[in-house]
Image 1 (cartoon, rainbow, N blue to C red):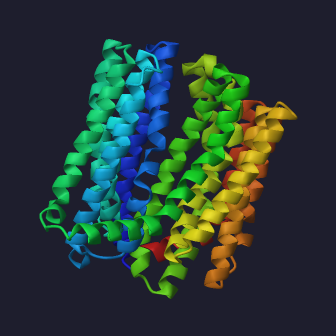
Image 2: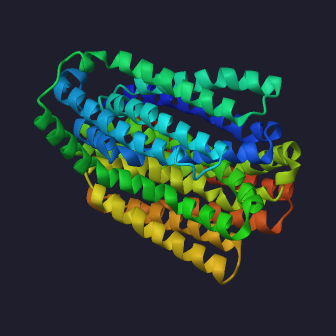
Length: 466
C-alpha cells in the first residue's frame, strides 16, 4: 500500500478542511455580530436544511463510492457512471420542484419561503457536485475533491469578507453567495469529470438498473451517516423544543466548534478507504494498528486547547459565556467521534460491514434519544441530555474498535484505556477547578501521557512513512 500517496492526499484534504473550518468559524463567530437575531436565525435555518440534503440522493452517491472504491479512472465504466449521474440529476430536479412548490404554497412568510427556495437550488448544486466528489475519492483522486472544496470555500470566503467589512446585515446575501460558491465547485467537478460526461450513455433501462444497484449499496451507508449526525441532532432538537431559542443558541455554539474539529479529522476516512480497498489484508491490519495507535497518542492532546479557546471566545462573545460549560462537556467528542470517523467507519467500509455500521449508529442514536428524553422530562437538565450523547459516542467507539479488532484477530480496545483515563481527568478537572488551574492539571497529565506513549507513536509513524 502506498502510504506516501495516502499522506499526500490527506495533507491536501486537511488543508481543504482547514479552510472550510475557517469559513465555518467566521460564520459562527462574526456573522452573529452583524445580523439581527431574526436574520441570523434564518441564515442558521438555511445551513441546518442543507445539512440533510444528502437524503435526497437516496444513497446513490454513497453506493458509487462503495462500488467503485479502489478502482483507477481507466478501470471504471464511464458510460455506466455518466448514465447514473444523469438519472440522479433527474430525480434531484423532481425533489427540488416539490420543495419549490412547498415554498410557494403561501403557508410561509417571505423570509422563510426564500430560505426554502434557496434550499431547493442548493439541493441541485450540492448533490450533483457530490456525485463527482465521491467518485474522485473512490478512484483515489482525493486531491480533486479537496480542490473542489477549496474552490467552494474560497468563492464564499471572498464575498463573506467583503460583507463582514461593509457590515452587510441582509441574510439573503449570505445565502445567495453560499449557493454561488457551490455552483463554482460544481463547475470544477464537471470539468474534471468531463471524460465521463463525453463517454456516452447506456440505455434507459440499464441506467435505472445501475442507479438502483448503487442506491441499494449506498442506502445503508447514507442512513448510517444520517443516524450518526442525529446522535447530537436529537439532543439539539430537545433543547430547542423545551428550553427555547436562547438556550439553543448557546448550546449550538459549543456544538459548532466541536463539529469543526470532528469534520477536520474525519475527512481522513474518505481518503483512506479507496487505498485500503486495494490493500492486502495484512497491510490493512498493519495500517489499522498504526493509525489507531497514532490516534491513541495524538487525540487526547486536544484537551489542552480547551482553556485557551474558552478564554478567547468568552472575551469575543461574552454573551455566550455559558456555552463553554457545554463546550467542556462536548470535548470528548473530538477524541471519540474522530476515532470513529478515521478508524471505525473506514475499516467497517473496507470489511463491507455497512449493515453493522448502520446497526451501531442506530443503537447509539437510541441511547442518545433515551438520555435526551430522561434529561428533558425527568431531570430537566441540558447537561444530562448532552452528557448522554457523549457517553453514547464513547461506547460506540469502544465497541466498534473491539469489533474490528475481532475481525482482524487483534486486540486493540485495551490500549484505549489511556484515552479514557485522560478524558476522565479532563472532566473532573474542568468540573471542579478554575479554568486555568484545570488547564495546568490537564497539560501536565497530557505531557505525562505523551512521554509514556512516545515509543508507540514512533512505531506507528515509522510504519506510516514506510
